[in-house]
Image (cartoon, rainbow, N blue to C red; front, side, top):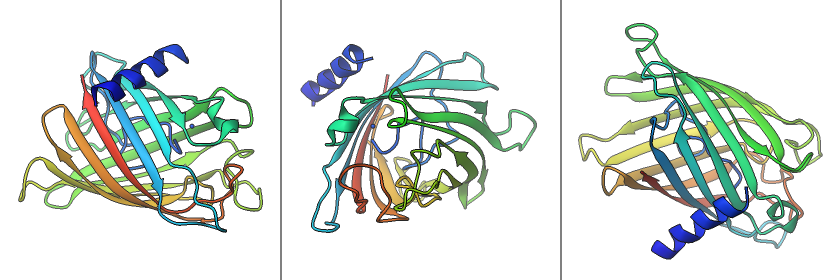
Length: 251
């Protein structure tokens, strides 16, 4: 594990796409959470294809991402991050860097009982019309007693890249999620279901759980069911469901 962490750090420093370049997230979609000021988050994610499509099983996808708090305020927060992605396709792997940023207000900061609000951007790649997905989004979230936190939002991105199987634009959609810490069982156990709309290759329903091994280390396991199995995103032209593990470490 120590060797893996060192490799991820070196790659990120020396080379300034995951399906998703990751700001603070639920399972798949961005969340209204923010990385705290003077802290850094390391995420190591992998996505394994669970079936073949047209006789082809796509390569596993690996992502190493760093996110850091950007603002020292309690009521108005922000973060910025960078991801290094390997996805087994040389067209994309030659341009493996994405950037993301997010700003907003945590719950009950605008007024008592106010929802959390977040606006942000992710998948800002460096190769025009290949990795510059340039996705912008906005979300609101509210934690309800017993039920947990509900999030709703909307996103829009580059219509030349976010397309369906017919290469027609499919660059926008809703963002939805539910998440809850299962305190009845353990404060370390967290469940979530989230959904990204759209017939592009990012659209998916995701179901998973997390276990916190310590205050700063947790692991997510989840299953990702894609809206459009035929959505185009690389030369393999397949979008089979994936099983993901996500290691999260805060410094």
